[in-house]
Image (cartoon, rainbow, N blue to C red; front, side, top):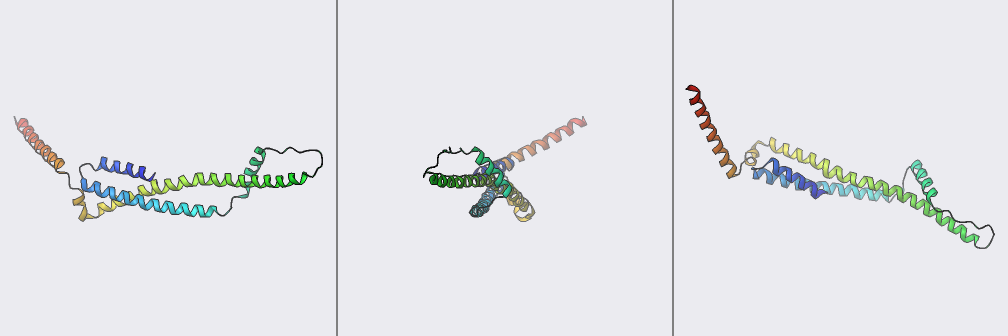
Amino acid sequence: TGVSVQSVLNRLALEHFEGFPNLIKLTKSKIDEIRQKQEMVAEELLRIVFKMEKMVYTQDTMYSNKLNQTQDNWPKPQMSSDLNPERLLISVDADATAMSIHLLTYFQIASGRLADLIPMVVRFYLLQEAASEVQKEMLGFLHNKEGVEDLLLEEDIIAEKRMILQNRLERLVKARQILTRC
């Protein structure tokens, strides 16, 4: 995701700053720097989330609702009507089944929570925060009056084309003035 965000931002920089190689170069390096920084922040937050998941926790109402769903979907054991020594095994099996149901319930809640949280953290840091940081950096470039001239140096070919077009415009304006006098 981080690389795809970076490629989109780089493509936008190329589209909007075409003809200004210094500005493109600086923008690309800042985009890469910001992406790396945001990836590190997102990774650290995800590490914290996984550390928190070591602590078994969920809200009681959520757990109760999910437990009822899991118990309803769990296959019911067949009970025998006769009393025999295997009844003790059935009791142990019932305890194991109950524990399995509780573990499955918590696993479903925790995996659902992580399935929502991980993409949300990644999107927040790699999209929203990165875009905001790029915007701040670009505005910072504009406020730095010393470096702006260097950033806005045009490529030679484009500068030459611009001069040719300006000269042509001047000649056309003069020609129009001459024609309007006649």
